[in-house]
Length: 314
Image 1 (cartoon, one colour):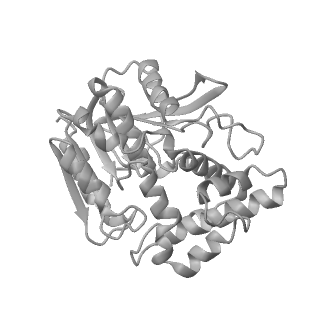
Image 2: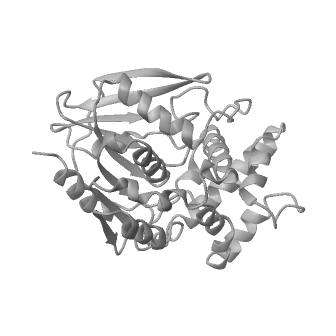
Image 3: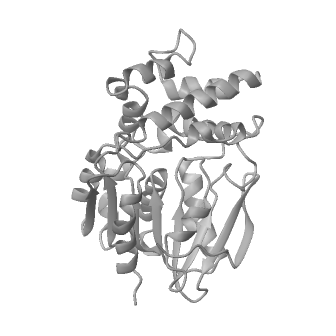
């Protein structure tokens, strides 16, 4: 794994609607550009993302998407309005950041939700994407969110009942993401905190069947949990602001863009089906299935690194 280096440039980009995005650039100022799209939505960038690319050869751009990380306003503030945070807003933000940094074309790296955003961006602006490296494949389709919030009760019945019972008695048969979103906007801070904890507990349950899976979100500070849960449920309650099947339907727009998708066999929250369908619909793509990996596992590292090395252009 490449060494972790500090950014040589940082800033805040005003993208309108009262939003400012934190961004950073690290690596080689004259290197090949790459942008990294974090997961969640709402998780924000992490220091570990700085180690994905060789800083000697890449100009690496990382930013926090709307309402997350160091971007403002922060969704951990319960008064913050999320109405100007949608997938089209984020796609426009990526393009605005590219223009702000004076980059003509760049490789797009995405993980989990970042895959959905990366696909939406590449389909909207294929002429600006040199390659795609996508990890833990998602498409944002309502079928995927129904799988996570309902169907996985067949895999984790005890934990799912706790998750289901976290919403009011009249709502368990409805849209659980929307029900949790309402709780996360409740005026009572105790109600918001419990809903955020319950949501993050369930996220940690379903993230993987791999034996090395460890809890992460359920252990994070309450303000982060509230931010993460509010943004995720906002997206999921609205079908990720995409038309049904949109990213698979429009996969032909990726023709001519080389891409590698890395997915874990043990990724129970994101079954391999989506990655396989996208691979078949995307001319020239490559799908690498890691037999002992979940949604995020160290064993995925060599395949991700090999894809990045291949696209380094040296």
